[in-house]
Image (cartoon, rainbow, N blue to C red; front, top):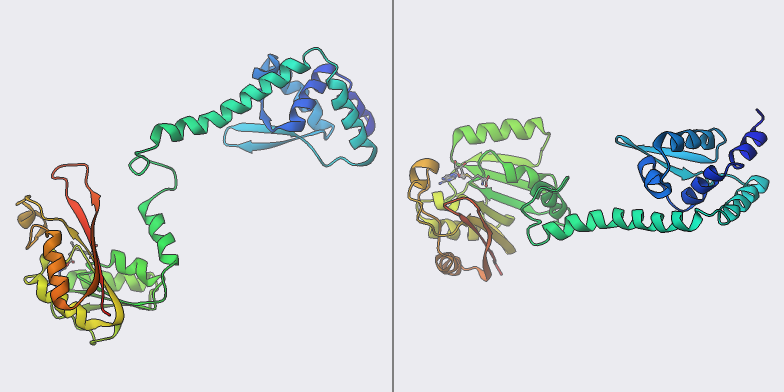
Length: 310
Ligand SMILES: C[S@@+](CC[C@H](N)C(=O)[O-])C[C@H]1O[C@@H](n2cnc3c(N)ncnc32)[C@H](O)[C@@H]1O
């Protein structure tokens, strides 16, 4: 059949006119069209097939569902005929009901998202959300970091160092475990991170030039140091003027088994102790907060302490 006749024939049926009038405004699935028009699924599918054949409607797949929309590509006399047909659909007795049902279906779509977010509000940080992770947030925050020279002391195999190296000018990762350093070196090489250098050494006397770094990080490392106060004194010496120290550690706790289980020298630190040692080392603008609390016993709390060398 010639295309024009196909086109006219497709628009000559009242049910198809109802569907065209609905798809002019919104992209809808067969289920939604069924709910709006109260027609059977196979009838709707047949009509949609004819409309697609006549290039009046286009479809888009999303997972297992297909959505249909009026093809807005028509121009000239065809566009005029579609406009007239949609005008004609308003004269059909089902038109008002269709429009009311359309609004209901669209409201429900909107509400479904709202119901979910209303349910999880207040605990959104603890529920799974596709694509949301602290790792992803970490990458986002890294993008706003200037190109610093960083010393990561007690770096382990370099989980944090690696992240930082993707953005920073240079990262020097210090650890006193030969195996950790060996793992870190291999991984950095594998990931082609040429600005990440591992050094074997003690965080209380790091093998780094004095006054050479912009940022010192001690992430879950200070509670392993024999003398935490002197470790902070050493960190101060590494920093350039205006440089910063960031310490992530456990808040003081009573979980004695941490000595045996994790090789911890200290059972976390009181915020007041950290404050006092930072001050003694010469740091200014000291800021200390508890930034995380674990849900499971023994409910370890993480303290973030930051300060500046003026
Ligand atoms: C709990 S891990 C933390 C690793 C890493 N900073 C992180 O947050 O993922 C502690 C690391 O500190 C290292 N460490 C312990 N005492 C140290 C010391 N005196 N000097 C340097 N590194 C030390 C350990 O070998 C271990 O790799």
